[in-house]
Length: 120
Image (tube, rainbow, N blue to C red; front, side, top):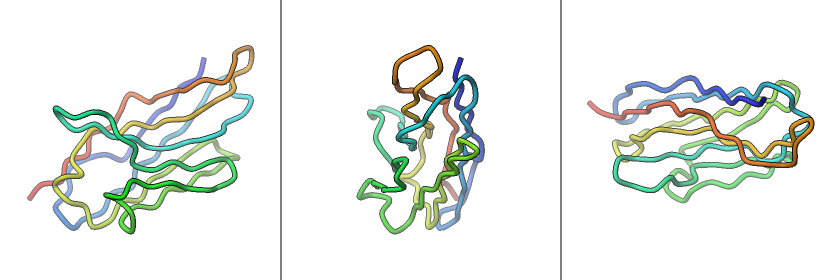
């Protein structure tokens, strides 16, 4: 069984910063991509940032220059540092990972999500 557990969401004022963290645990053999997606009310889930095992990264245009994704392969963790937050960043943020679990094929795993609210 593989689990992704997020932490670090909350309420922040416009212009503020938050750091989201996610830890993958369980019967993990290997992790390829890790990342963060978000879903605002009434909208589809969208990519925020992804990082490959090679450390190559991809960001949504809306967060480029404001967010930095990083991972620790030894600890199976991924983090998202978000700066200069805007009200439109308000959403539930989901951790994602593409994992080869012992006894299973490669597949997508998702965390339960953490709420980020940007408001004054």
